[in-house]
Image (cartoon, rainbow, N blue to C red; front, top):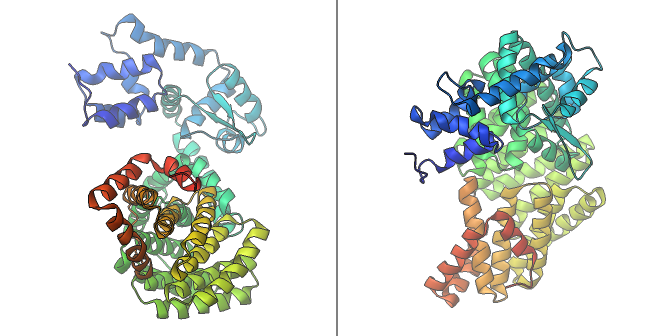
Length: 499
């Protein structure tokens, strides 16, 4: 008597996705509907294979999944079984390095994982997938992963395997953190690819190794900020904060993330205190690079709260510290931060000079994050001057760079900038569609950031466009944009000549 409806749709879709669309596995899950809701089934599937195990009353077909898995498992050698069950630690796929780190222990010697993994692929117990970049990732279909997890539990190796899994992803996150200014786009892509594994590592550390949870969460805060995982990141940070912090670098990173993610969700009052505490810890530690980055988080919290002159003074101090370090990337970052405050204060001549210089450096080094903000501030200057036609192209270039390194939060501002620019040249319908798409993405990402100068620009350009169209027509066009979906909206913004 089950009926699909709005209340259970997401859970049903989750079940089908989790079971990789395998009909028999889905049928076994559906058989539990007599006792469980769809949401209960989805939750219990994450806990192990037992939910899919056929009971005594099961029809013969329902017994084949367990029988097939048992038969395949029985045919494996001891080392193959050991690697197979340890691979259950992974969520969302893994690469060879990760498989070696987690799999090579008792029964699996150093250097054996590749051969064993190859045999598991040949026996269809592991799937190997090659990307367009010629990168191979592996995964277990979810029913097989749940079965392997059951075997891992029976073996008594769960904690040891989870320890190795945590160690691998903690080290990966530390490397990403250390190189986040030098290889931003590459690390953002890598961390996004491993996000499910990072979540799993954080969850296990939270229950078993709280200090490692703090280390891992602190190292990932910058990733959550730039890839717009604001709500999820804040939840991880909140749990760590509630356990208490010390005066370590890991705690400083947690405080930085807490400040930044709060600011980007519009909680400016919750942003400043952790930023100042973060800065105090880094001053005690004495790391000039981290001091500059912590100081700029204080400056951002002050700017978002509406005090642009005070924020400018702090960003100028950040720039001075950055120059003392001799780190070109840090200097360019802080130069662009100064540009943000200058453009907000209406000093477009100095903004254009600094942003143009920073853009040339960023283009030469091919650093997408700097390219994005440099184009954005130049576009802002054009819009303030009233040169909307020039601003259109600059915002499109900024959008391309934001998409390239995966920052959907910044992409929202580029869509809004494009909407204002198009309104400025009389293309009101497309302007409203881009505005609608931006509003939809803001809501989806819980991005509540507002800036006084940006709101004034919206009033200047978007309100007249709405008036020219009329309230009903303007709302209709915004709804078209809302319904586009983010990727389609970005493609629509790129196609400047299309109305």
